[in-house]
Length: 182
Image 1 (tube, rainbow, N blue to C red):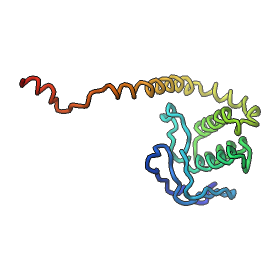
Image 2 (cartoon, rainbow, N blue to C red):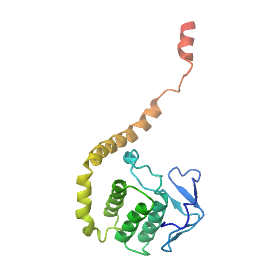
Image 3 (cartoon, rainbow, N blue to C red):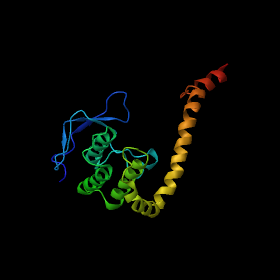
């Protein structure tokens, strides 16, 4: 077992819808420790992929450890490089019982995330062939996800405008009843 104990309790601080706070420390068998009070978004899964891999699941401990290591990389004090961090994430997913397809999809996600992060990008060239192969192998997920992502983006733009023009709900039909009596 990679983690010396199960993931401690997570709480959601008020006003922070996508943030969780670790209540208790999380310790990995290799000596990594995530301190109590650490804040995380768990797995940073794009909303359009939640149908396949929700942000929370049996992989939460691996996601928390990965977040801590990425925070260290972004702060310029990495214990290991980005490739090692992402490889350890994939290993933790395997050790936690994650299936091979989702495990490699999640690894692909964190490596794609490394592409857009200047602090995590060094060394990415060595993984590009595997990333390309995984994208092609997962076109059955990639194409519908792109369509869903665009649809969600459009909805995110439209919903606030629609909400501001909507009349208050009249669940009992009082407007119609008042008009009929008058």
